[in-house]
Every structure is written in C-alpha cells, then in structure tokens.
Image (cartoon, rainbow, N blue to C red; front, side, top):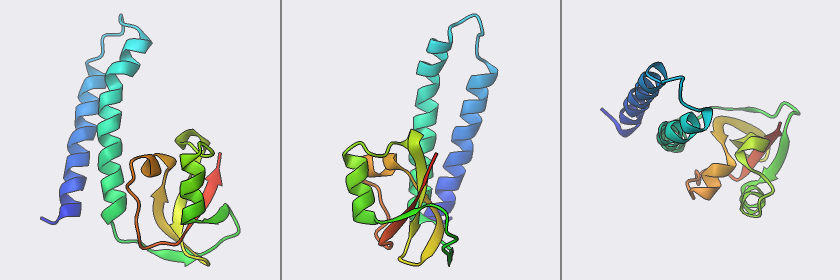
Length: 126
C-alpha cells in the first residue's frame, strides 16, 4: 500500500470516528460543547486532507475565466497578512495558463504545507 492509499484509509477511519461521535451526541448538552469536542475530529480530518492534497496526482485544464489568478508567492503573502482565511474561499494550484484539480486553502499556508510544483493559485472568493 502506498503512502497516498494509507492517507485515504486514515481519512475513512477519521470520518467513521466523527460519525460515531455525532451519532452518540447527547443533545441535552450545549452546542458550544459540541463545537469544542467535535473540533478535534475536524482538525484530524483537515490534517489528513492536507496530506492527501500534497501527494495526489493532478490534472490540468485550461483557465475558464473564473477566479483570480495570482502567483503562489502573492497568495502566500496575502494569507500570512490575514488577507485570506479559509472562510473567505479557496483556490486551486495553477500555472500561468492552466488550473489543476488540487485545492489550496489559506490554512495550508498557515500549516506551511504547500506543493512546490506550481507557480500560481487561482483564487475563488466566496
């Protein structure tokens, strides 16, 4: 089993754990408690998804006129300065004239986990 397959397996397990947590939730407790306790599951899933995005093969397609193309360096700078957060939208790794099917989020920058084989990002604002 290769590394990517192992991450997909871990993702399935993490999603199953989240389902068990949700199914067993005591609705007499507050939503705030649910948020705090479920955050551990969502964080684990986010880490695994990030690892998958770093490893998985990609496909490129022509730009379709949607989104804002920027250099990866500009995207990173915008994220680090607080200009983009995950709530604002998402991007796709890109080249100057092609878009990949690999998503990038501002939290990837925060985690310092970026693909090095792309020069640009196409950003889709909410």
